[in-house]
Every structure is written in C-alpha cells, then in structure tokens.
Image 1 (cartoon, rainbow, N blue to C red):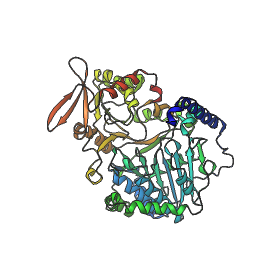
Image 2 (cartoon, one colour; image 1 turned 30 degrees about the horizontal axis):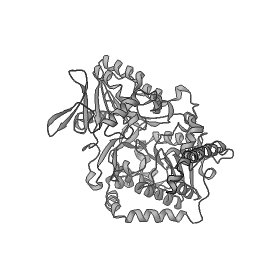
Image 3 (cartoon, rainbow, N blue to C red; image 1 turned 180 degrees about the vertical axis):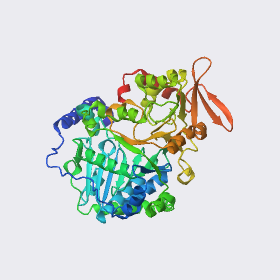
Image 4 (tube, helix red, strand yellow; image 1 turned 60 degrees about the vertical axis):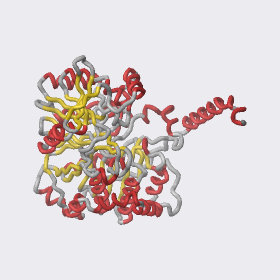
Length: 519
C-alpha cells in the first residue's frame, strides 16, 4: 500500500540515483602512474628445472620453436596448473577474463603457491571482467612476491557501467591478449581465458577452443611483449586502485581452493587433471613438440589508449605474415564480422581460385547476438563468391570435446581463433576476424610455419566440421539454407536452426544499426 501511494516518486528517485552516479563517476580520476615500480623479464633461467629439460631440445633445433596444440580443455587447465607448480623464478600471466569459479580459484591458488616458493608472479588482467574480484586481487597483491595490474581500469569499482558514460573512448578498448609464461622457458598462448567454460569444467556452455604450448626462441618474444604491456600507460597497480587487503586474507585463498577441491562436483575433474598425459610429459620434458619457425605478433599496447600507429596493428602485420594464399584459406573465428573490406578481400581470393572456408558460431551457439548481426548481413555475397560457410551447432559432439560426459556440459560455443593458409602456415591466438580485434582491442598470437598444423586445421573442415556445424548455402530461390548431417542424412533448415522469431527479429534490427565498428 505504501509503495503504491508513493509510486509517482519512483522516476524522480531513479533520476536522482543516476545523476548522483554520473557525478560520482565524473568526480573520480585514475591514480597517477608516477613512481610505479618497473620490473622486466628474467632472462637467465637456463639453470631452472624447466630450463635444464628444455634447453637441450632447443639447441637441437636452432631457429625453431617447439609447439604442442592443446585442444582438450582439461589438458589446457592441467598444463597451466602443472607449469605454475614447476615454476622456480617467474610467472608472467596475462588474460582478458579470469573467472572466480572452480578453475579460476584453483589457478589463483597455483600462483599463490608459486609465490610462497619464492617465484616472482606478475598478473596482468583486463579490467572489463573483474567485477567481484577486487578482494581476491588485492589479497594476491598483498603477497610480497605477487604484483597485480589492471589494464584500462574502471575508476568506479561499484558502478562500472557509469564509467562508459564519462570515459567511453578508453573503456571501449580492452586487452584481449592471453599468455601464461613460466621461467621464460615455456609459454601458453591461444584463445582460452581462465574459467570453467574454457576448461570443460562446468555445466553451462562449453567453449570449443585452442591453445598452444611453446618453447624455444618465441618464448623470449612473449616475455618481452609482456614487459611492454606491464609498463604501458594502461596498466595500473591494483594497490593504487583497490582498498588494501585485510590482514591474513592471503590464507583465505588456500582455504577457498581446498573447498573447491573437496567439492563433489569437482572431484572427478581434479582426478582427471592428475591423470593428464600433458601434466606428466611436461614434468619430464617429454611433450611431443613440433619444431617450426614461429613468429609472435601482438598489438602495440598503446592501442589501449588509441595511440598505436596503424603499421603496428596486428591485423595489418598478420596479413603480411600469412601472405597471400594461393590455393586455400581456412578461417576459424567465433566472432566473424568481416565488414565490407573483409568481404572484398575474401571474395577477391575466391575469384582468384583460392578455396576459402570459414567456421564461426551459429546464432543458436553464439554468446553475443549483436556480433552475429554484423556477420549475418555479409553471408550472401560470400556464398555467391563460392566461399564455404559453416556455423557451429550449439550441441556439437566432436571438436575438442572428447570427454564431455565427465563434466556434463550441455552446450558448446566456438571460441578458437585460428587461420591456415595453403596447408603450410597457421595462426593461433586471440584475434577474431572482426572490427573490434582489428581496431579496438589489443591482441596477440603465433604465426607458425607448420604444414602439420595447417593441414590439421584444413583436415578438420573435412573430418570434424560437417558433423558439428551447419553448412550455409543458397537455395534455388536465392535464400539462405542451413544443412546439417543427422544420422547419415541431410536435414535442411530454411531459418536459423534452434532459434525463435524474436531472436531472429532482434538480430535483423541490429544488422541495420550503425554499430559494426563496435563489434
């Protein structure tokens, strides 16, 4: 009754709340970076356990780096965890997303354990997805050997969305890089963030993804690149942004990890990690590396402030490194928004006789419908040029998902980002084929001159993709059709499979809005 009597006041109260929040955001400023302690890569680590196992292999393959693909999610987690446990000098860790879930908690504790052993830990996270982590990050940073920095942080920690109203140009630029480097001897680079959905460890959407473990000369490149980002004008020490951790809070991290390990939902997963072949092989220095010339590419961190020179951008350098495909090009990108320029490039290749194949998410599988809108309006000209388009099903069954029954994951969403050209060169990294990766976010990855890896990606389009994705084609009437393989027969859909009218209508509306540059 009281609520009804005073309902007319609600708009005024809401307006006052919004205005006060905006004033609070306007009145806050980022702290100065003057006097920020600078550290750099630890180059002399050949005498560590990892160094003694790895360096003899590196000397046998001069000018080449050793590469191992991590397709299985639990292997990807296990390799990170075991690498952290093997660290003796340094851990340099850089991610766009770090969830405060089971795998995130366990890896936070792995960093903590390493620091307790005397390892210097540097953790650089993009601030866009750290909501709810301030206490954990401040606690980690309170350890004398752990330094935590946030890239392009929000001034207001509680009402983050208000930051976009007053600082949109900066906050719209995010650090999408992903790397995990131990003792400057071994690194993991690829598409995975840290979270249960990336490591096959949850019951929600499972992200089909790809990382590579690398040793050899490219590790130095990753370490130097981490130093660039660590020292950039966008990286802020958390002790200048967050309240100090409570005394003794660091012990809570171990307690939280212990609770996770004892959780019945996690026990089978933890046991599977302990049995991972990658864990044992890494400890013994016996991972089956492929040795290939490998180049690390990354954006200038000044891109985070909109100050990077055009020639320094990864997108431009990636085109140069991959070269002009002569026979075939395979593109795997969860967010595929080619824009008119990208359409012209791909259509031009197709008209020159290059077989172009693209795998991206279907509307039912994507986690960002707006991005699908940017892709959907470009499908027809790509198909008319003879380009093969595949869209990942929500219920995929084969690609990098060999052990789904263990976790009970109910759905999949493509998250791997990789290209292969002419069966000889491959790219694995964080870069999506979209305007955001090209112009707004910072990205990184490896160009690997490896026929084995490139042909493996090409082979997946023959052996795995047809069973796990819809093939998009033009019907006799010129309209789109989605073809799937079901029990050895073809099923043809005349509308986006697994979607309802309102979702399709929303995507159609977004497709005509002038938002492509944001996608």
